[in-house]
Length: 532
Image 1 (cartoon, rainbow, N blue to C red):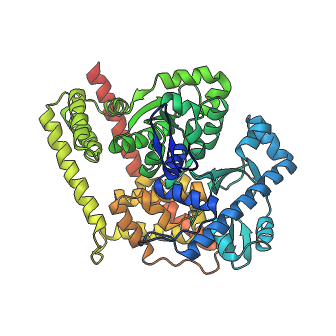
Image 2: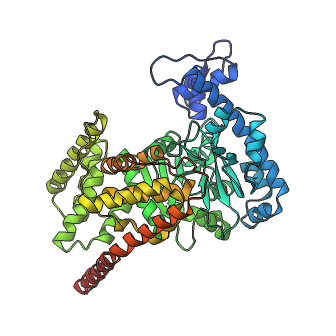
Image 3: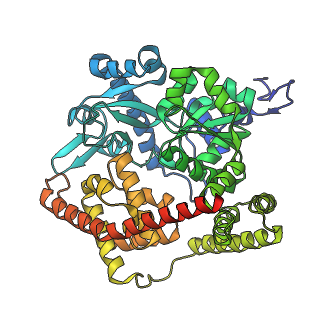
């Protein structure tokens, strides 16, 4: 490093460049992030060209919001020291004492507006709203996090941009886990828990791989056991942005997921994303333990390393799942398997990767390469056309499809947006399969996910998880939405009527679901008999 020449060179690996290159290499930041970090350290005000730059007002609000996040973090940590039940809970989970201190774990008191009252004495309303730490209704400000253990979420530069929180009371009706609401600072689809630690990860330097887990405690347990290359997405599904962020730090990614049904479903969704992006990915599945946290606590680092050593190639994992779902000796099911694989392969960005995937799929399905490649090419054309349509200005809305039945279902979804607390009942009463169209089913699933994770429905936050048809359904649902002006008031009567509609819709579909279940059971029996 030569400060006089404003230049650095590593005589070991040959890397060289200026101060911006150095920060980008050491902190794994992109060019803009490196410039902004250096400007912040030097007290320099940046000016931007082009339409993507934040306005001066937005930059000012962001700076104040980041300051408030640090202020809130100090408060949460101080509250933890005063709250014995929260400390006992963390100790019982192996997260107390020095572990809590290293990870900044805190506690939000179970009080309605304690933090809001303190914040109003120090920050302006615009800043408070930008953090999402406090909300406002007709009765005034109230705290978003209450009665929860808090986990600070940092961006790649190490700045606190949000919080994850867990309820202490297991009997409470509210959702167990809660993240900051989407806003100026916090965009869950673009963040990873623990990403700020990857740039200095010793394990990452040794293995070249980022470990993608499911939850905060999994990541903490992994780091405490020496696996400091672990991160976790902040939502129910891994996004392309999160994969790209992880890939910025490592040559490859290993998905470390639970061995239960939910873990396997999450694994397959994540596998589809990494394969489409062409990332070197493996899948490590936990068996004999609920999750990585439990495995590390019960059996230690060596057992966890054994799981990593047994990780499968992501494409092999996908092929195995497809073979488990379809009895390939039956031509109809073999064709279904081909369509499923071709749909995923067709979304892959690299032509050469699509060809390589197609060859592997042909061998696995015992089909000619030309047949598989033809199906892949057809799916790729569909995918490209869909992307092109999404990027074009949308024409006037066509009449909504589906007739009276779909119109009734949209009305139920609209009322759920108006009274989202009814989603707590809907999650146990009404299955997504009750809806007549796949787009409506997908929209309903994401509504349940958003409520379960955030305790609120923000239409803009749903968009990144919806495909084109489901996005159009969201627009149709929102066309006639009427959010109550007094959102903090008691709308028990309206919610009860909505719950009755939900139960009615569920009852109408119960026969269909039973029929589908019986048909699936019959098919499985037939498959076993055929194999025997």
